[in-house]
Length: 321
Length: 244
Image 1 (cartoon, each protein chain N blue to C red):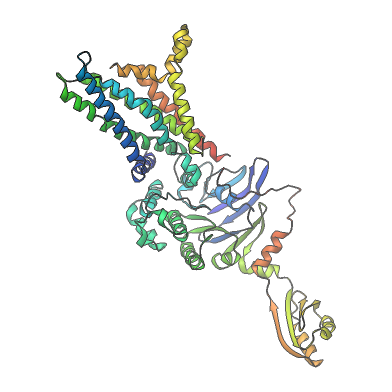
Image 2: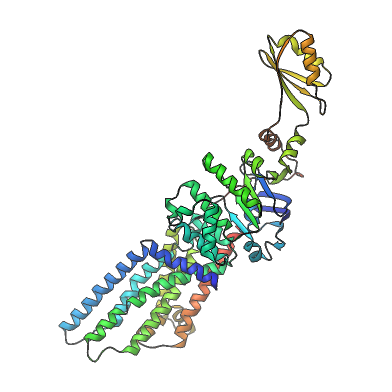
């Protein structure tokens, strides 16, 4: 549904997005992940038809975003980073207005329907200025849904919400994702982990990694890290653990625990346990640490990404220009 | 067309869900009412004049419209830029010029609403004087006002499309209107084609004909083309935002 090839966007001399290529299939929920200023918002603005790319090609549902912009925009639902609302309108009037712009038929019924979806049916006649931040966010999502778009582009849909609202919004997104193609940006990894089928990690305007959340984790967890805890002083056992076949390195963590790393594909835990017990130590605990997506993310985005000597500056949202 | 109407209707309704419409109407009708009353008072005291409805129009147009219309149009696009709602409109399946024309049309409809209400003054005058006022002349006056408002409103919307700051849009519009008002000043001392050009560009040069009850095709063409040209400029300004 979404096909991006060699997308580049420059703001004057600053390069926000460089040579970005990816595609999103129908019915997929894809997370667009990256630190602030990675080019997420810029990319989404280009995909939504808000601004043209400096070079490269974007196709939404087979329509080129530049040449057949109106047709492409007709099938896109877009929630910008700062939810743009007319605060002096009621929720119902606002959604009706947005629906009319997108030529929705039987508009009143449809507005009731989307209000149900975002659980705002009882606030239909409230002025938007009277709504809380979380409700406004949901109005923004409703706005993006009102014309039953095939592609949904959500820029940080859960930003600024409280935990209960976040869970709520995620549930809504998952529900929508059953029929629609969804591309959402976030810098919260657990969000990507539990909402998205697939994750694109973007850093400094380029894709740093692209995979399913599970695969990404195993890919980057090449070696296994294990924490061992014994009764008594760990100091005496460090040499013993290090000498066990399959163990690469050992590091003392505290008085009675240490962390060791094993070779890829070689689970050295039974051997370490056997050695420790044979040597007369009381083994209390032995557990592996999975690299969380957080750590993977940091690892990926901390390192400089070689980019053919191209200096990539970073531009995120520029709402007030 | 449906898009333009959707935008225009929201714009029109906006005036009535905000205090703008009521304050604006209050001021317009208060000032016009006072002027109208004084007009009748003076003419009833002196035997020399008959009540002069064009006098009221002059006051309706200058300065109420020169400040009033810029005050209405200053927010039309500037506010969309500032609040970010432009992003929503520009990612909706509508063309940029639909947005600009819709904005203009919504405000224009509001101004026309006010203009229709002002018909009450000539109607009262007509019932006071014998044998009544010259209705054909009155029709020319009103056609002039309707065309004038169209152009002034378009100028305001177009200038608003340049700025995300409303005060800048307000002052810019007032400035532009003053230029269109004074531009034929030098024509009085200038000979030849230069004077013709300056006269042609001048709003009062064309508007005064309507006020005298004269309807000329070139005056109508002036206001219509001024409306169209400024709206084209406004659309280009909105579109250029995409490329920044």
